[in-house]
Image (cartoon, rainbow, N blue to C red; front, side, top):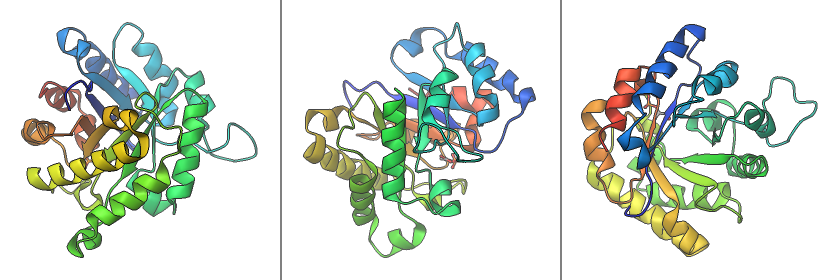
Amino acid sequence: TPDIRPLVAGNWKMNGTRASLDQIKAIAEGVKGGLSARVDALICPPATLLYVATALCDDSPLLIGAQDCHQKPSGAHTGEVSAEMIADCFGTHVIVGHSERRSDHGEGDALVCAKTEAAHGAGLVAIVCIGETEGERKEGRTLDILKRQLAGSLPDQATAENTVIAYEPVWAIGTGLTPTASDVEEAHAFMRRELVARFGAEGSKMRILYGGSVKPSNARELMGVTNVDGALIGGASLKADDFLAIYRAY
Ligand code: PEP
């Protein structure tokens, strides 16, 4: 979208050990320079690597974020990580409502909305994931699902500064399958209209990323679609060369 600064974001999921910090270093080096003035780059490693990763990016425009947060700032929630803790480690973004959280942990729109508010409360940008399943697409319900997830997962105070939408068709994640450019265009145009209807001018500036099997070979086509303001990348973000090739598709 004109006037929107694109974001190319990597989600490492449950992958990455200290040995993988070399990839973060390479990405941090690779995004220095001209392109970084127009396109933001973000890597979301596992929580174990968050603090050391932000330290590695001290002199790089590469941003570091987390993959999930709890909806409360602290307390008796064994195993959880709060938005405050992410901010304390100098993380700037957090993914919420990823389809793997929705399916593996039964997270619904109301909880995703609470996590988004928690992220905002800690000063983080929330990357709110939505997307239809294969069955829902086959039944022709894609836009209905997107409408419901957008309405339920975003709090009223969401702005273009504190919120990014990631459209990730569930059937395209980790499968190598992608929707056609015209299907992506239809979905993104629909989400843009919904965002503008609810948030007005803020909705017209909110970034809408596409995610689901983005790789160097299809990045240019997908990123060229109207209303696609960047990418959320899983598998291809683990290797610096692949991530940087996608980043440079801009
Ligand atoms: C993701 O998990 O957000 C994702 C898009 O994964 P992949 O790129 O591997 O399909």
